[in-house]
Image (spheres, rainbow, N blue to C red):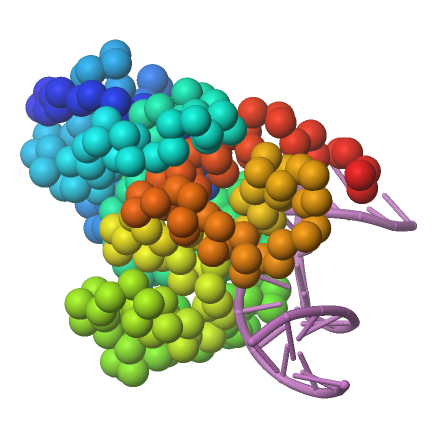
Length: 285
DNA sequence: TTCCAGGCCCATG
DNA sequence: CATGGGCATGGA
């Protein structure tokens, strides 16, 4: 069967899938192969306005990729005279915030703490291969909470998880036994949702905000990791980079970037991490 | 060898 | 409430 064709605007598939939101997509030919929930999907952006997707997957893909987000309108709400932000935006204007499955996103970011992006990918693929349902020779669904709960902490440690194995296992248990209902808490407002997520083992403000942004469509969430913290200090507070606490940086971001600060965060993160603006081997200033 | 990575937990003050 | 040490693993 031929692929379905989606007409897209302001969309960049490669930047979106390689911006540190999601970690399991693989290049295949000119496109990507991966899973959306339990569905295997192929994606290929043929040109600026054409996205080819697996037959019958148009609605699923559109929802997952956030193709309904009005990026032009979102960009209008961002500070126009903010040079660093506009530069990051110009670097990858079609980068979109995904709507990932909640459990998959939560579990993946629990495994992300103090790990580099390639490691997170390795862990994610290993967990899928060992504990996820196989749907094709090279494609496995993300393991369910029940599967990871049953696997046990020791088996998870065997996936290079280190101290994160306990967090992932404990959280899987709590989701599997219904202590926390990830669907139900989507009814909460941002502050209450963050608090609910932070009750889970291994989930603090940063991971909670990632899950809110990448799975719950809370576009005002603002995850602060080492990249964003460094970028904000150097780009906006170069005179006294250590004057503000991390908490004060978040407060600045909230008022400065506005209601769609999550998008601003992702553009800045992607630019900072992949453009070489912070060369990694640089010694302490 | 040393440093660092999409942080969180827990013990102190 | 704010701060600092500890934590597993692997790549640069």
